[in-house]
Image (cartoon, rainbow, N blue to C red):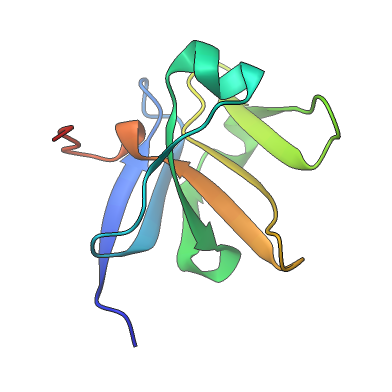
Length: 108
């Protein structure tokens, strides 16, 4: 089993909060889609069962574009996209966590 750590994160105003179990040393991607590129999003992908939305399901709005495969969720108050969800290449549910929204994130 991979060495993991649970991290908390959320949007800027605090309306959306989550906990996510990440692999230590997990790959972080600078997504090059038109949405993430404009927002400088850095993503780490996890199986959906390792992501737990603690609050804010009713505080988000869903945006779909292109092939409509990824649900980009934004806080209705502050506009931050702290995560998205969809199916991974294997067809299993996955969550794309914006690591810039993790508490204590410091780019290295």
